[in-house]
Length: 184
Image (cartoon, rainbow, N blue to C red; front, side, top):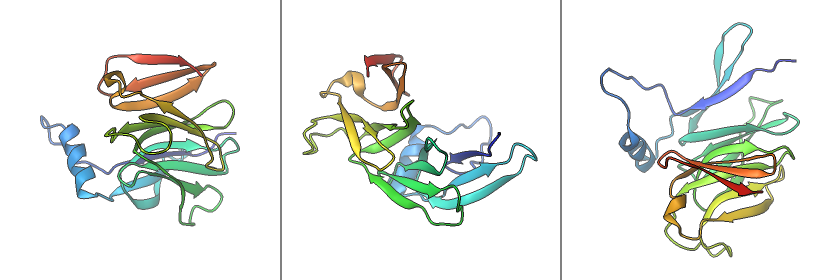
């Protein structure tokens, strides 16, 4: 069975070549509290795209639950993850998890748990027992199961991805030219 594909984007940008958007544009959107992000639904059968929800604060990462009953969407500016009920797309999202730092991407592992990268805001300890959290693993009930500690290392600046696959954690960055691999 083929399901509709959900995706998010910050907003429709008017790109006039040769001008391209840069990290400074994203910085401006974040600092201004921009809430023009939308959750869109694409129907692969007829090509229709519909807006399921708008007013998101820099959406950045989407993941379905293991049974496809809900969808998680990161809201980077708000430092939280929202939960959308797939069976009732008109229902307002609920705050699923408040985060200590800015989330970047969200991935479901083979066990139905989720990993989210904590991209920025590494300015010191948070008082949660982990001095420098760079990623979090949590279950479908929003219970935090594990927090990765970057130990203040510059290697872990701007973590944008934590993907668990085959007993390994793959850690990526939009600013670094590497993929880190750790045992899960």
